[in-house]
Image (cartoon, rainbow, N blue to C red; front, top):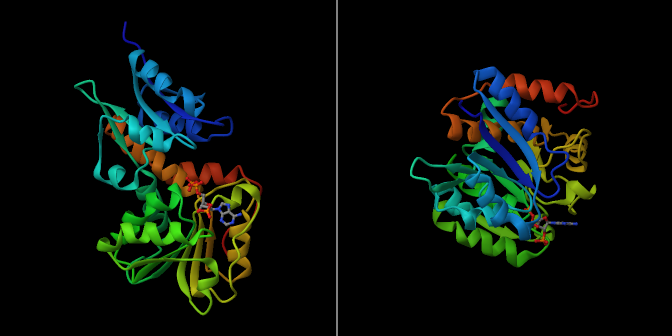
Length: 282
Ligand code: ATR
């Protein structure tokens, strides 16, 4: 008897994760036979829980907040993008029994911006709000698209400056505080702070968004986040949240595990249609 391939997402909390649903749809769509379940894992139990999962014939794991740095430390080998981002959201069992760590968040964002929303990044002035783990994971994939420049603005200025310094050999990138943003304009503003989750917004000067500029919140919610609303109020041509990025990073993980690329658009459309009917773009 052959047993079904097992996958899971570990996080804390995990109850509201959309990942099990997304992977179930991917599996049905591609005719893959697998099981994907959510598991609430506190940080202090992470290593033991991962070891048990793979010992019990688990094939692959997604790791989400607050476990991505621990997953990075756990992996036997890491892809270059995971190595640079110092965070891992995908663990995959390899043929030799080792565990490969990857980070699909950055490529998920790029695919959502460029493929799903036809947003061009080459030559654009990009502002990233926040200098935590979420920002770190998207810097290199963004720089690879040859933007004009990236500015990281953060409440704790040192963190923004240090993060920018780490990647300065890869493109034009600098760090500053929110008050240093006066008189500057950006074509794309990405919110990578954790403020959306608490319904807050970093202090942003007026006129920050250039004409035809785009706002993108890495967080997602059933209602427009405060930052998505800020974008709409500031005449963003598109003001998006991270639902598309979530589905795209999941598709990339699915590809790593199964070698098959699911179609993401119908999944994004389905999940979007289940939210409250709200206008997310102007
Ligand atoms: P994540 O892994 O999700 O990025 P994190 O590493 O804790 O989480 O980073 C959270 C980010 O949100 C940080 O940039 C944090 O700013 P500080 O570095 O100054 O702490 C930012 N952040 C959280 N609450 C904020 C607030 N109320 N206003 C502005 N920035 C905030």
